[in-house]
Length: 416
Figure 1 (cartoon, rainbow, N blue to C red):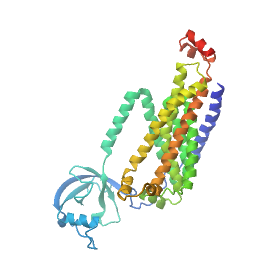
Figure 2: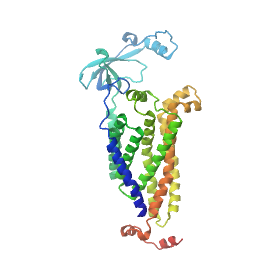
Figure 3: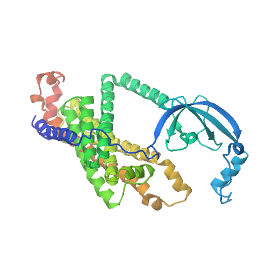
Figure 4: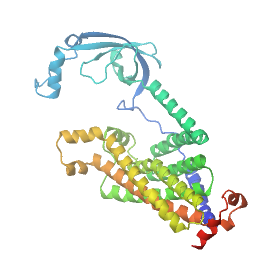
């Protein structure tokens, strides 16, 4: 009971501080800006491909040697191939917005990665300042239906297997997205410190998700405390090594666009915020699993002391560490696979690849997150062992004592 009071004395003020942080930093919506028409910062509408016909690329004006006349380059070689190739002329109908029902045509070259077909749902970009016949262009495929169907299958699978816990997990997932969309992202765009916003937002997500899914109990509180300590370690390490490695966080077109639209945003702070939020999901898994393992070990052998519980729990944790770290590294490597392929084509050395900022960011992100995950295992296991071993058989409530069958060997184990 004394240890539970200590945990409550830590977590209750922490939860109050998170609530105050949410109130103080609440943005009230993302700031408006004039659209640039670059990347994602474009007006878009839904559309449908109504007709596709094959035409000669030369007739459609979709071919031609570069002005330099050099056909040895990739651009020149492609132009020569298209000169005698067959293109497609697609007619697209706008299905939303003020120009609903308007049609336009677009030429699809044979070497384009995205080919259009009749009846296909697409997303079109709108540029009002362009000439009328060039205001619309196909920018992507409309994937809402298959993605919605996949999300529905995921939700059904979670509920069928997890039952009430699965429902609570989906509710917690929805709340996490709400915190991300209505607090974290707009607050950063409003100019608040990305690190402070990420810490407050991630803490709110952690408290809501863990207590909603696993209930308000000492077991959940230990998992929350272990997650909090690990997040603190990740924040410190991330801050030190991002500064030491001189990582700017501005490495691609998207981050460049963000910096151009909102120059006051600290991009390196945004990188650190991403590391903290990205590590939170895996940390929850590790801390909850370790806490549950220690509690079940105590149920199996209530006479086991905290040292024995810690040793048994840490053996389980070692297997967990091996699988989680490997998963994290492979997840980042899979996301960066096209980039790694480009370096392989260029025959760059490992040192050159690792030293580039784009790859160095992923290395720092992976290693800092992995160190936090590794540290969470002994920290959470030790906390759980201390708390659960404080429940002596003689001091347990009557309901808990009756749940454990009385056996003659129980007293003899305590004497040993």
